[in-house]
Length: 242
Image 1 (spheres, rainbow, N blue to C red):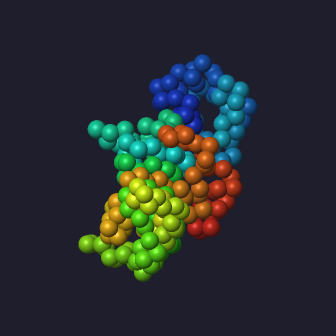
Image 2 (cartoon, helix red, strand yellow):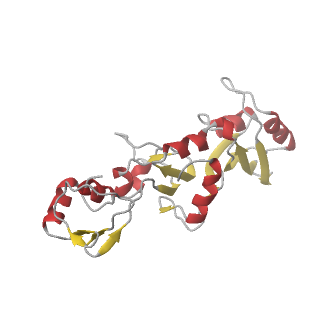
Image 3 (cartoon, one colour):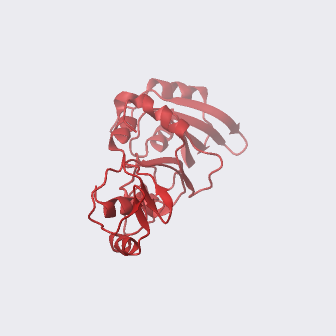
């Protein structure tokens, strides 16, 4: 890998900015000041430092985002703010993308990475990855609804896999329910359509988890953090290289 590419991918600056940094003799390779952007290095074995600070090459990045409502799960959009606008510059430079999608008005956990193999594993129906959502519902969800979810709801264009409906609370006076819904798919508006099939309406939806990943309670809406080593270890169970 060329030294300038390595520096750009570490978020040091653009190609032009990196060339200027090299000319200022702020970069060292294996302890020796280096000014040539064309120098080829091995990012896994060569030691590169910028302004005295060691740089570590990361091929794959993993972000946990608390996606807020009003933001779309896309890398680019001419009309709306995207989840990429919530992350740092490095995420865009490294080609990070959302794993799956949440509707524009849905909040909660979203994983973003540039590891396509992991994204495929998490989204594959064959893997049966649980996704848990919390929903506020207009209407009283019942034991009968739970049975219907468990049997697999038939929508106009899709026969849903069996799903789990946990009723957390009901407000009989105001005809409202708070529920958790666990699905293993991610069809368009699936949770909302499943609830609608039971004669009720979702008024608020938040994803709490995806597989082994749980939404960090310390994150505020729109905030993000990198995945921890423990979380990455859990994802290794999907048989991919992280």
